[in-house]
Length: 280
Image (cartoon, rainbow, N blue to C red; front, side, top):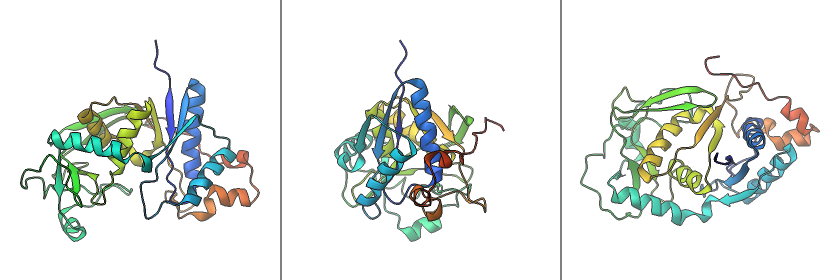
């Protein structure tokens, strides 16, 4: 018997959704509908400085206006105890360590990202060999996941094809020890995403190609926590006229601005690019 398809939309209420978000979310919606499955809306509101209630309302309104519906919802800010439990397991298993590096330290102890993206720099392991951490979560402390040095994390993306990213702390690595817990008592994006995808029973994650490397990190966390690994579909990104990847700073390309300008949902969907096949 085949496993039912379960997908998710995961917007953050830190700004208005733009056409790039709409493009990815529409793909997720269409793939779920084609599979006759279930779609979650996950409100990724863990950023206390930037998350706003009016943006949370707007993202739901704009998605419904576009024609996207879902069957269930969750809010990450209501699930911190679950993230803490996962973090405590990583601590007990000796897979994470405290990091005392300041912003200035990190500027001197990391190399630049390998590509033009929002990806974090490769950490050089400065705190990795410090005193053995206690198996109790220490307040006001950042923690990093200890990656397997030199291991290539491989997966086959449904859309982007075969992928391989090398873990480690040397200059040839694609990614290094990454943050999983912040000193403000909240999980990183990587840990929260893994815990929630497992709890929701997600069978396929649809998101942008800028998060391909995050998938390698999340596979390591899934392995460490005993969670299954879903399928991944990393959609092509939309760019502005200058070739810059769309972000929430592109207010003129927000769904709300397009609605106010009189565009219809179909007008917006007609602007979505065709997805390229692997190697195209």
